[in-house]
View 1 (cartoon, rainbow, N blue to C red):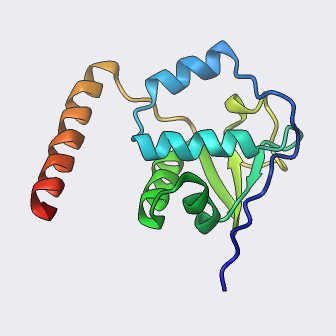
View 2 (view 1 turned 60 degrees about the vertical axis):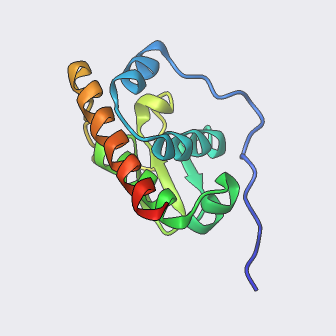
View 3 (view 1 turned 90 degrees about the horizontal axis):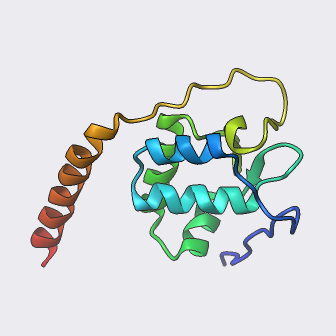
Length: 138
């Protein structure tokens, strides 16, 4: 029997992002799944540590998405440096998103922003792959 438990945020205080954080988010090209996972991690983030506690199964249930979709979202966030796993079901958000808060001193990855001119190319390739997938399953 699986649990349908999804943790609530450690604080009901609003999550605020600096202009620098918003600028960085505008330059990181992640899929809709990656952005939805990031938004959920931000919602669940502890204001004192910048961590979010949620399993990938819980995230899939919360977002109404498949586990492979959620895994792909987590992978994109890790690859671009916005969030990474500290341990099972505990994720650290990049300090630029958490007002400098981290769980403990650690090496912080550099955020890998995409070149704005590459957005169109990447999105076009992603769209073509989605259309091909739909054609194959349709």
